[in-house]
Amino acid sequence: MAVARSSGPQVGDPAPEFALKDQNNQLVRLADFRGHKTVLLVFYPLAFTGTCRGELAEIQRRLPEYHGDAVHTLTVSVDSVYSHKVFCTQEGFDFPMLADFWPHGEVARSYGVFNPVAGFADRGTFVIDPAGVVRFAEHADPGATRDQAPWRAALAAAAGEPAGEARAVS
Image 1 (cartoon, helix red, strand yellow):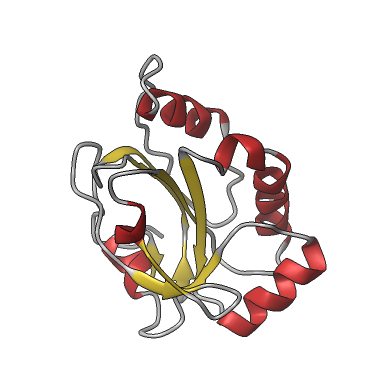
Image 2 (image 1 turned 45 degrees about the horizontal axis):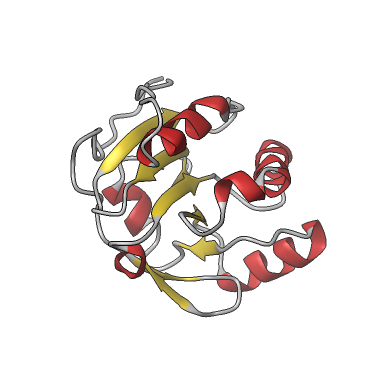
């Protein structure tokens, strides 16, 4: 059964601001990257689950493309800071995992990817340019495995290389 969800930002819209704590209990604000970095923002349902573990391992493998001088990767779930810390340590992840724990799923809601029936975020991916504008938006169901090639194309486009296209996955 389809679940009505609020629509999130579309390509060309300003990205909703947020401030969340990472796995080290440090506050991370989207605004901190304004003016100097493109942000790859990746929502995932829950830590310690198969599909999420696989996707995040692929991000770790491609971290040189996803995290550096021009790009910063942020991953978000409704898990707590504490579960993110254990998950990062166990899996060897070297990127920020942000806790959208309380108010529960508030940031996922603002991006239109919160699944109120399940109580966690669907899979959502956003590329946000240094001006804070969404350049790529993707929404996939919790069990889907996302193709990361469009993310790389969107990151290249944000860096001034040939533009990628936004797509929605449902």
